[in-house]
Image (cartoon, rainbow, N blue to C red; front, top):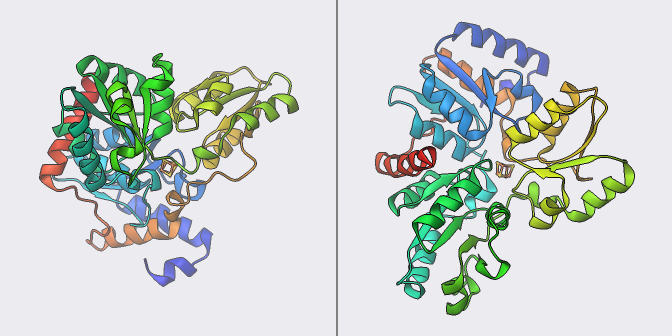
Amino acid sequence: MTEKNKEMDKGAVFEKITARKKELAGKVLILAHHYQQEDVYQFADFTGDSLKLARQAAEADSEYIIFCGVHFMAESADVLTSAKQAVILPDLNAGCPMADMATVEEVESAWHELTEVCGDQKIIPVTYVNSSARIKAFVGTHGGAVCTSSNAERVLSWALSQGDKVFFFPDEHLGRNSSKALGIDDEEIVLWRRGERFGANSDEKLKNAKTILWQGYCHVHQEFSADLVRRWREKVTGIQVIIHPESPFEAVAAADMYGSTEDIIAAVRDAAPGTSWAIGTEVNLVNRLKAQYPDKNIHLLADTACTCNTMSCITPANLLWVLDNLAAGKVVNQITVERETAAGSKLALDRMLEI
Ligand code: SF4
């Protein structure tokens, strides 16, 4: 990014982005995730969750896809788009700390240990879409599937019908919430501690497990607790609590409902005017809902800001920098998934779509 863009007044950056968008119309598609800050979000052609955006990119014929999200989202878009399209992440520091908690090297080594203990059982790997393309490829080539926060229970149920147990990456909480929703007993849900031999589990525990959960988490959703839910109920009579399933089980169990970002948006949109809501997800989405539905009483579930700091790396200044370069005929910060990885990854994504 040029120093000039960083120093430029915000209004001037907005004007330049608008002008560049007009100049590059038809060639460029700007996508923004629900957690993106408003200053960037306002320039999006499409907004949504990660998979919805990747699929929109694949359906569009724009040459350049600027993904205002985090790294794994841009990778998924690259896997699903054609070779003629370039996917761009305006800041390469925009990663997902949770996705980074499961590297393919760690997962391969854990898989090796698990199959050593449970060699006579069929293990199906399942990965949350919030994972690297290499993890998705590992899952795809080992007979497993990707899941999202809205279909995790369905994918888990499918995986259990295909084998004896599921190895779930990288979000412990989504894995536990989905397992519990399917009625799996606590003793059959096992945590695989990263960096520990056999995930710090006995052979017996692993053999008896139905779901083995990778010890990964999202620091934003980890903040939510049953105590916060209780406090809101005490404070506002009749308040409804809705929470994202990346949150700990105790918080999800205490809430009135849980669901993906798209489910949260739909619940608030369809609610009656005057209703009160405490929402357990990233603050930018909660603030946007507050602004969109002033007839409803909307609060963030936590006292702290709950910001996805890495997604905040995408700023109007680096969006403009990408557009300036494209106008000059130069593609910067392109995200490219190597062919073999893309094929394995697509296998896992396609399997999810079939389920
Ligand atoms: S909100 Fe959490 S899971 Fe989503 S991109 Fe940020 S760190 Fe990753």
